[in-house]
Length: 97
Image (cartoon, rainbow, N blue to C red):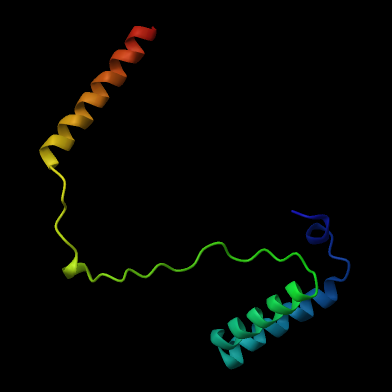
């Protein structure tokens, strides 16, 4: 965390901004708050502020559950492979002792 975030040089102003955001959400809704946030972020970036944007977005599966194919694997073979891997792990540990 940067020193700027650790040391609030004007806590009254910060609280006013937080109160304004809370009021905006309460009176105009989260969609409006999101719009204002996006505009502020864009303006900050254009003004040279190093803004960290969200590195993720909501994932929406484009395939309906009922349209997804059945599991293509072989359950019995995979169960056997997992058992062999576990057995091998035990042998490695015992050999190391």
